Image (cartoon, rainbow, N blue to C red):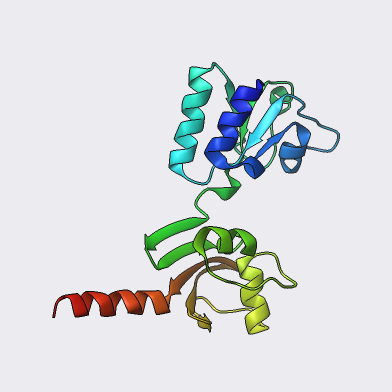
Length: 184
């Protein structure tokens, strides 16, 4: 794939979300399979996805996806863009202070994108942070607090924390007070 196209993809989703060759598709491959000509791209939202599709269409580049866990054998030698939807829908913005996020979202990414201020530790994901904080498996609907964050476990699947609702309470309260004071 041309360097110009790679740079455009990186501008859309960020450099860390564009990976050339088998390194980007490894988790979708059966043992011994390789994808030397695919570029894995990880969009985060519908807007990024649309830009990728438009870029591919305008430049006559194939798009490959998977409908289950593995790529199809016939796609291994294709040249084009492999869409990895791992980042899609990790964050649903409710308002400026409230976010529905996927429990599997990396703490580093949550801090970077939402400015949550979660500490690093012996865990990688938001769900791991919650388990560390509670020291037990939470129940659906359980509330917890960390600094100025209110966290509600909104979806569990068995023992797995699927989704949580995070509210930045201090900032939300300041906004309410400013709105009330502006009315006086």
